[in-house]
Image (cartoon, rainbow, N blue to C red):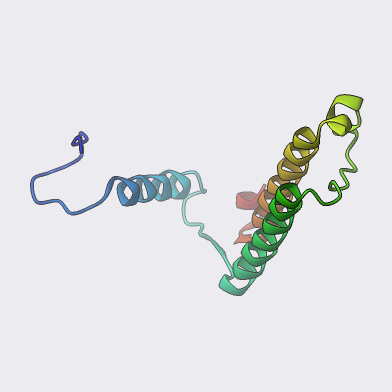
Amino acid sequence: MAANASSRPGDRTSPGADFAHRLQQVLASSLAPGTTACIDPSRLARIQQQYASEYAELWAGLLDGSAQPQVDDRRFAGEAWRSNRFSTYTAALYLLNARAMMDLAEAVQAGGKSRH
């Protein structure tokens, strides 16, 4: 494994943990001074469970050939999206991810200016 610029001999921090730590620092620095932001753990768990359930349902439908998902979004109303099963699932996964990100954003508990 190649060492990165921040590695020191004997440093046991994995590259993934280092990235997560740096990402956390960047996100924290984007808040106004003196503010904090967090997500209630039970709400986060509900969002994650809902996402995982819908994700598994979509993939199971794709793999077993059951009915295509309903995609009610005008961005995906074209015939090319509807006529190709994989395109329909791509659109459905995109919308699932977008809903999950919006749910996470709404779940953030922060001061008024930090939320917007």
